[in-house]
Image (cartoon, each protein chain N blue to C red):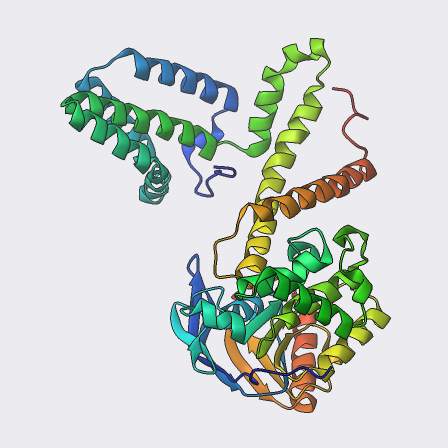
Length: 203
Length: 246
C-alpha cells in the first residue's frame, strides 16, 4: 500500500487532493448510513463505474488491489452463514469493498508530495504543541522510502539463515535487522544534515 | 588449509529459467562445473546474483534444476546444506548472531551437530584461520574485513563441496582483498566466484560470462575477460544506465 500512485493517467489525477479527500470522507460516512442490500449494491456498482471510466487497464489494476481483502470476506461470509444471515454478510462485504476501493482510488490518483502536503496542512494545529509540520512531512517520506529497504535487508538475513538451515528463520533475525535499521537511521540523518536538515527552513 | 573434504562438488545447471514480475531474469542456462575456481561475470542486472541463489537452492527456478553431486539443491535442502554454501556481498546482511562463535556454530548445529561438537568444530575452524582468540568477540567490534572473514569461516566450517561467492570482497581495501583471495586460491572446494573485480579472476580456472540471463561466453580467463572488457567499454560509451532489456 506504500506507493500506490498509478502510472495510468486518469481524469482523477487532475482533481486537487483536498476535494478528493473531502469526497472520500463524505463517501465513507454515506456508506455507513444505509444498511440495505440495494443501496450497497448500487454504491459498489457506482464505484466500479468510477474505475471503469479511465479504461479497462485501470479497472483491472483496481480490482487486483482489492484482492488482499479475501481473508476478511471469508470470515464475514462464514460467520453470516453460521448465523444464517447471508444478506447482512453481503451488505458488509459490499460496503467494505466500496470503502476500500474509493480510498484506493484517491491514493492511486494523487501524487505523494500532495498527500504529504495535505497531512502536513491538517497537522498545523499541532504547532501549538511544538510539532513543526515540515518534520512530519519528512518523517512520512522517510518512512515510505526506507520501509522497503528494511524489508529487503530482512530478506537478506532470512536468506543467510536459509542457506545454513532447513528450518524457518526464527525470531533471531529480528535483532540484526533492528541494528541495521538503527545504523541506517544514523546514515540517513547525516545525509539530511548535509543538505540542510529539517529545521533550517521554518514554514 | 588441509581440510578433509567430504567430496569435491560437481555442479550441473540444467536449463534453468526464471522470470520475475514478467521479466526474464534467467533464460535456459545450462553449464557444468566439476572442479576448480570458476568466475562468473556480467553486467549489473544480468542475472548473476539470481543464478547464485538458484545454485545454492534458495530460489526455485521456473524451469530446469541445479544438481550438485546428483542432489537437487532446492528440493532436498538437508542434503543441500552438506553440498553447497554461499557467501554474500555484505557481512552486515549476513551475520545473524552477536558473537563470532555463535555465528560459526549456527550452521553446524543446523547440520545436526550437538552444541558441544559444534563449538569444538567452530573453535577448530577459527584456529585454522589463525584467529583462535576471536571466539567470544562481539561482531560489532570487528572491522569490515574481519567480518568478511567470519562469514567465510562460518561457511567453510560446514565443509560444503561447493562454495558460491556473490561479490564477497566488495568494499574491502587492497591488502584485505589480497589476503582473502589468497585463502580462496588455496581452497579445494569447487568455487563459483561472482565478481566485478576482473583482476581477481585472472588466475581462475574458467570464466563464464552471463548476459541478460543467458550464457554469453565460457572459457579461459585470458579469452573471456578481454572480450568482456571490450564489450563493456562499448556499452559504457553508449548508455550504461539503460535498463538491460531495452
